[in-house]
Amino acid sequence: MERRVLIFDTTLRDGEQSPGVSLTPAEKLEIARQLARLRADVIEAGFPVASPGDFEAVKAIAREVRGPVICALARANPVDIDRAAEALAGAERKRIHTFIASSDVHMKYKLRKEPREVMEAAVAAVKRARQYTEDVEFSAEDATRSRPDFLCSLFRAAIEAGASTINVPDTVGYTTPREFAELIRFLRENVPGIDRVVISVHCHDDLGLAVANSLAAVEAGAGQVECAVNGIGERAGNASLEEVVMALKVRQDALGALTGIATEQIYRTSRLVATLTGMPVPPNKAVVGANAFAHESGIHQDGVLKERTTYEIMRPEDVGVPAGRLVLGKHSGRHAFRERLLALGYQLREEDVEKAFARFKEMADRKKDISDRDLEALVENEVLKEPEVWSLDCFQVSTGNRSLPTATVSLVKNGQVVQEAACGDGPVDALLRAVERAVGADFHLLEFSLKAVTGGKDALGEAAVRVERDGAVYSGRGLSTDVLEATVRAYLQAVNRWLSGMPVRRQVAAAGVD
Image 1 (spheres, rainbow, N blue to C red):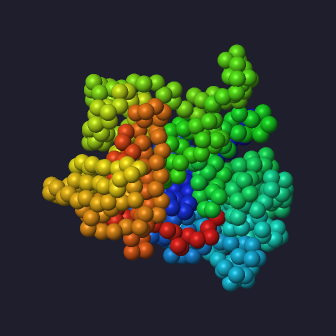
Image 2 (image 1 turned 135 degrees about the vertical axis):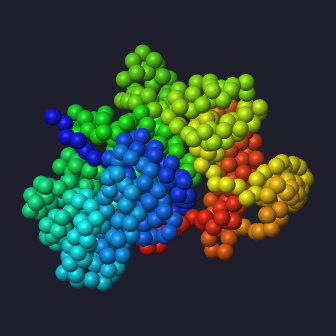
Image 3 (image 1 turned 60 degrees about the vertical axis):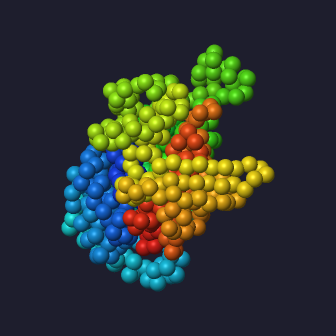
């Protein structure tokens, strides 16, 4: 009988610690809902003590998302644990995940604690967490660089204190598959009571070994893998959820374990996370990259046409890659639009359907046919937007390789139209300068990116910006068939986030967690 491996998703906690990632509470909630459709076993919703915003996001997810266990991270101290418990109060199923570092280098230089003190803190933390829930996970941060004998003692104490899951993090991505498998076997053989709990692993990708290490741990007996959609996370990221899940599915014969993941939801989850975090998926990314199922070589094309399995070890539909069939146009009505959204897996409130439909009609006037990928981008970019203080009315740009780029913008605030013009080094610079004049504030543009959602001359363009003002960083996204319009929309979203006090939240308190 095949073993069942639990998938613990940390996209909303460790994934959000990726440099430059900015998620609003509404965006985090939407990702959590999609993770529930994906059937993740555990959703680590955040680190409640890190900020009021993170607390509110975890609280909302705990209250509204059903199915998966909702987990909150807490350092091994009473304040963190009580705050996590408060955020999780409304959860159908809840878990407190508490941690403390266990390696000599961390204990000496970061914690400035003796091993005995670390042991006492771990035990006290687990016992306190058990007062709120029976589902308590304990992590020994930097476990792969810890002394094995101390690690065994620490895990034994945590189990005796009531931990139901023991996590073994490769915090800095240092170990190799062979070493990690040996460590898991060593712990299974030398920690009393470990057979009564779930052994979890959390691998980082600093050496590009996170997925390989996670799979090696599963072979050695680990029962839970902690991973993130698209592999996002601190530094080089975490083990990629889609790669771990599909490796277990495709190589079930070799790995002998299965997950409960609804794999047909993988692509949609990947797209949602990429869009909302502003971290695009590289074309050559395994499983979900644009080239994952593409064949350019004549030999490969010939082989696939004759027999798919010659060059494809999994089917696009296995991970939910859409066929991209053109289905809607400017004459399509609300009913067809709503039905297509349902077919794509979007269950929106009526007011959100209306908002998306209005933008769809605008796009359909410029773009002959709207594909499934266009619709996905539209929903992910438009439906979750915060209420706008400033909105775009219209703009005009004059540019050329021998002329001074000039832009005029007309913006709306509280029903009043504000018009401004500016010159710049190029059309984008001129447009953004005009926007800044209209809103009466200057920003420092940190990052700007453009990408096409689909192919063709009338493809939707997706713009993403990150701006800085007064030491705080704000992000924005915009979508249009006109890349300049997409840019203005992205910039205005960043401006509106500045006005509403929603900067990119950096989890200072979370620095160094697994």
